[in-house]
Image (cartoon, rainbow, N blue to C red):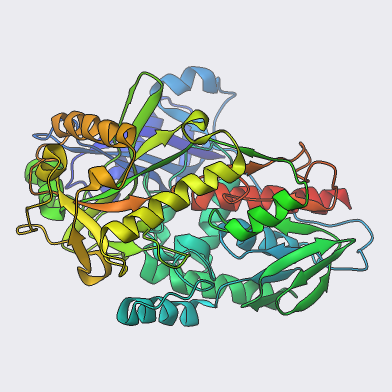
Length: 522
């Protein structure tokens, strides 16, 4: 039987063998288990509430024989549980359709939907408007060097989706056993093994690029096809019309990502049911990573490595919170439309950069923008265009020190902390002019609150870079409980762009759910 022993608190210096001995000792006390083997770390997190006594908190899984019938409800008080096995079944038993399923978009939702369909033997076809990983990297590098944006292949569009140029975070709030399949698949494709047990797992953009390439190769080896540089233009009567020709489909999966504004416009013109939803906008905040390490871990900072954080505050009907925190990372130019500024964050696997950065985002409610899908998109676009003009209309990002942001002036040049956006391609501006007053007010409220939680967080020389507008999709494409679009049983909105996910893991799981709906439909 597979057993889980939870809440093992250990010092930073505790070895793996010592940890396993602690788990074994706890089980022996019950006098109900024997023949312990196949120990492994199941979860690991850091408890840094007491900076003078930071602890690592583990869960350990192992195989053990059970001597008698046990009441695991009673054992739960001792942190002992049975760990049930979970296996996904992608078996397709129906008659194969004459046309293959077509997946639009190769971000996390599209990747895992296509992988599941391929495992079922349905030989999916994938179309992706952006380039393959290697070509896409060259497109991004060319933008940085020439300031000429490729609107089809950039940090938003291309193999792996926006997550390819991120920290590769895999933590999620959803509690779905399919997450285990996603993590194990990433490891099989080259991700580090510890993502399966870290409480806040990450892959890093450098490693994730190879993972995406390997996952694409796996789909192709199972009979799938992937067509890059191929954008959906329209669809009707079982045929998708693209920039590279027509594709017949039995099922059409729209895993388009949260920045496919032209596709949203087409769907709206077609009469597809789309509703506006709340989203968030804000800025990227940059600290020295060493300052964050010291504030979070105290004397244990060197032993524990780059620290991350997750902070939030809610007041009245609005929240302000950190999003996509990137330890040892850089702020990147994530625009997908010309003459606009969009910022995001990215880290390599080692998180060994000088700066820590995170989005600090403020909730935007439907009434803030007019409560229609078109107005939601225009709200984002107007902020991005305004930021471009504010910083000199040259793809420089508007930056400001924390002190100047509170004072409403733009006079202090960065000194101790240097901005990382596009290798420092920035211009000092007043970000109070880049964002709505309510957003700026809540940012200031948040910074004050966060400064009380993390020492130095609101220091006057901290760098703010604007604007962060693509935290999530501003709309939701409505679908049924069977995952298909309303009034169209063969079209399946999927992932973050459809409004049903909020990160790599949840988008991947949604992709699997959509694939299972197609498989089980027969």
